[in-house]
Amino acid sequence: MTPAVPTPADLIPAPRTRRSGPGYFVLDEATAVDAGPGTADTARWLRGTLGAATGLPLDPGTGDGSRAVRLRIDTGVTDELGPEGYRLQVDTDAVTLRGGGPAGVFWGAQTLRQLLGPEAFRRAPVTADRRWTVPGTLIEDSPRFGWRGLMLDVARHFLPKDDVLRYLDLLAAHKLNVFHFHLTDDQGWRIEIKRYPQLTETGSWRTRTKYGHRASPLWEEKPHGGYYTQDDIREIVAYAARLHITVVPEIDIPGHSQAAIAAYPELGNTDVIDTSALSVWDDWGITENVLAPTDTVLRFYEGVFEEVLDLFPGTFVHVGGDECLKDQWRRSPIAQARIKELGLADEDALQSWFIRHFDSWLAARGRRLIGWDEILEGGLAPGAAVSSWRGYAGGVTAAQAGHDVVMCPEQQVYLDHRQHAGPDEPVPIGYVRTLEDVYRFEPVPPQLTADQARHVLGVQANVWTEVMENRARVDYQAFPRLAAFAEVAWSALPAAGERDFTDFERRMSVHYGTLEALGVGYRPPGGPSPWQRRPGVLGRPIDGAPPNV
Ligand code: ACM
Image (cartoon, rainbow, N blue to C red):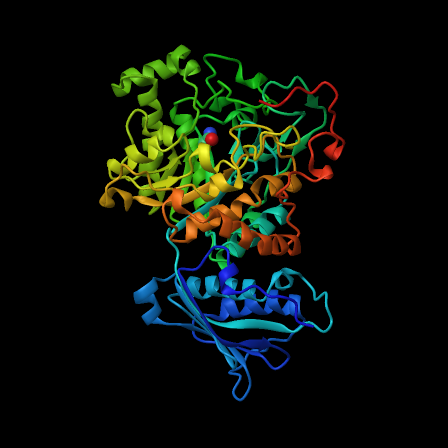
């Protein structure tokens, strides 16, 4: 039996160029995987995924005299399409996948998997007499942006390690390559730091959780929490690396730090409030409890970052820097003395001093700091990169000043925001951002010159989880919009207004099958399924809950 299989015209994200060839390749018992130098990881990945889905051996070998999937790194492809580019040629007797580097081979393998159809995304065969065919084609492909990211907030709601690993698989299936891991916030500290055990002993649990968004008067009266051990983190980072995904850890300072202060009260502004009375926050929004600008705090966080650097080998380390209320610093004699001693203009400059300290500290260790666009206030630390979230403005300012920037404006790519204005959305907060809105997102601000635009490293979708208590909620918010985002991040699309959303929707009709095979609880085009609607899900209290805001 041969079910209808996708063609190159159905791929998401769309490849740069594609041509149809004659006939098709059949993947069967005799098909060998012939891995050239530097491609062994992708060969193993193909055997693991396609092997599981098809039940075929996909033995290593050259496939002489029989059909083979050949994986090669090819400097010709590197020169033309870059290290992440690939050329995929499918003939009746061979699939030849040439990548500009190991990552290019891997992204090409993702394309091959899509061409085998949604059933290729299952973990075991479901049809005994399934014939696995790939249509003849020549695809040449490479990404528009080098930073194609997803940020997942595991602080507001902890996602168990397995859910994180699954998200890495989902990113890879969409050719996304940066996982921004938001590990700390007021409501929870999620990474084991050996020298400061209270960060997780105390900081990873809160006694209750606000049900709904900020205006809700309801709490769920049960503890919530969890954290990743250092071995969990090593596993996540290593797993990501095999998927050609870089994990960017975020330790949010100097705001969004109440969980840390609850664990170690000396980190807070002890001359303003009794920080020993603070607990891990049980509400949403922005708390005034921020780190004190003291040497004690700097040394403490250097200790945290030392362990973070050991765990995360990537260049960038995210230090947050967002939404740091300055009220306590205004009232704190210690903070005011520091401002005077350093000859700073005000509290914004004090935050800038704080961030600059870690910029130099990271740079001295061969790393680069990235922070939310508030780090522009009071002067941007030299060499720092910016996550532009409050619209385009931060990205424009940063790029014009010669700083690298990742575009993730909340108006376009905050996937915690609602997808429809109707009453059934399970997470009815924020701007309405439909699948089409995300598809039409243009990451490069039009006012940038070509030289300045080169500072746009790429794009990122952000998933904040205040009102997403588990993976089902995250799936619903992230998908299908992450598929549209992936195309924005990867494909060289025409200008936003000229994009063919009708064709994207047509391709999505195939892709929904893939998401189903992957077990993704996406938002159906017609709106949430009854079990996805807000009331009653997970048995949470709903009587009297006001609409979220
Ligand atoms: C943010 O949304 N506070 C970066």
